[in-house]
Image 1 (cartoon, rainbow, N blue to C red):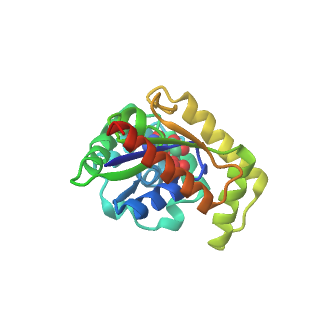
Image 2 (image 1 turned 120 degrees about the vertical axis):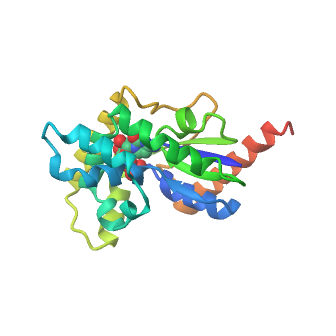
Length: 213
Ligand code: C5P
């Protein structure tokens, strides 16, 4: 079974995808980490003419060692770099195969990102599109960062999330929209447990629907 979980920054999709993976006993890939790893690898070239070619090279040679250092990888600054490399078509193409291989392993998988239901796994058994309002997303991300001991400027964080959303929505190579067969889940007023219960119910219904029950 392949489960595709998409949504904007800090919508709760990563937490929900991890919870769904535990619930169904499936492996989970947070595809945002791939773009973050590429962005971090080329941070030193930000604003230079080499940025694009370096990012393409980094995406083509990406392996598990580039995903180490999760604290830095999940920082707001690396998130902005990730959204910059994500608009490069050759970066997306290089990361496509990695994601597709993960999705099609025997038994299936849960993938979360922006274009899983539209481009990576248009054939997924269940697709969820997770949303939450901007203030709720900022507050959640702020608490995550604070729990890791980071000092958070909420005003700056809010604007970083908005900047990232705007770049992602305008990405011409994206596919960052709700697939026509994806189920919408708004987590603004839900805690983690309630959101996961709702997500499991949607996946079960989608799978039962496909099986013709
Ligand atoms: O999911 P996360 O916020 O960690 O993703 C970081 C950035 O990586 C996003 O803002 C987006 O630009 C990019 N991304 C993408 N396609 C995906 C996952 C993430 O372009 N499937």
